[in-house]
Length: 472
Image 1: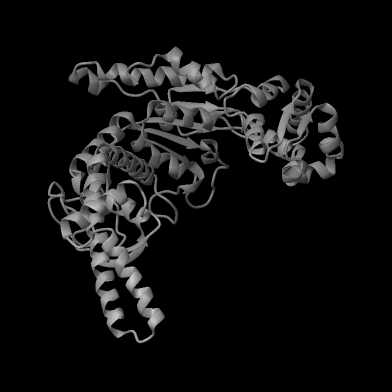
Image 2 (image 1 turned 60 degrees about the vertical axis):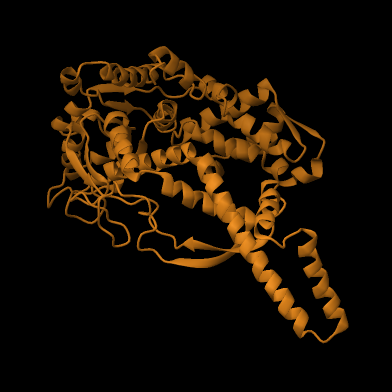
């Protein structure tokens, strides 16, 4: 993030999102201001608050995609929620505090995976040692079983089979412990035993991380204690059992266990909480759904009640999570809504003030839809070309074919509900429905998607308004 500028952020967003430059600029500046804040002295740093943003525009124009790409770009803890899932505290439904809880869970898991990678090499080395032990133990059990079977067999053919197994052990010079370990270590390193089944001791599945309770201890599997003492915190109080798995799977399980023993979970949790407080991004979709008709009787627990509960969260408060308290003062909140039937000014005044930046996203034109089909790195046309290439089918979209798809999408958006670029998903899938179904029969062929092909596949549906209402 320290090397990113607002212009670079916008350029990166342009790779995936067509148009909406005003929204991209507003979000880019908000993110860079957070990095600038870090360079201030501690006193001033506490005073600089994030400028929360409301993205206003019809569905399918890129509101959610902007927030999602931004979170990936800056590698920040990110969570997306729908405002309609929440109710006022004390009523059936989710409380808004769960937004921060979800954000913390995301951050802890992300930091945990990052720390695992840092100790991965050492964990693999320790796991390899344990794996050698397990294989050697199995060899010893196999040798004893072979000797017992040889002594008890009466059939001469059985004796020969048992003797050949015993000879196999001797051919590997597995008569001494040190030599056995050397040979087994070599076989494991060369992945020659990956498909062999062995028995290992594993922990029963438990919470992947110990976490401090509200009093500062650990709450995991009934154990409470200082979470800095974490050598065996994950396995403390858990039962171990024997499990038969392939050597390949055993290597993965043991590596994970050894990595867990090497980590200091106190540091993992502290780091994750700092990331949430300094870099967290919350995207609240469907904010406009919190503005509804005035309730004459009773309380509006899903509308105005949720708005009031959001106030302290957005303004800055302390939320208790299972990992400890989290301050929301510097979390960046990005809200979005269509605001078809109401206006942002109909939100309660206090909440309006917590979102000082408002950006209106424009409706997608036919030209925008055509660009969306070809310009982004994850364009639909590229996705389908890659998918069908796995079957040996080459798909080519001609410029007039792209224009025809975008024309039909714009027409359907005008004729019915405007769902923006999401209409392209339905149209392109319908256009390619036949070739997707029969792709294995057309291996080595090239399919050209031009305007005539598009019209043949979906032209009648678009003309028949009653039918297209249900299909497109």
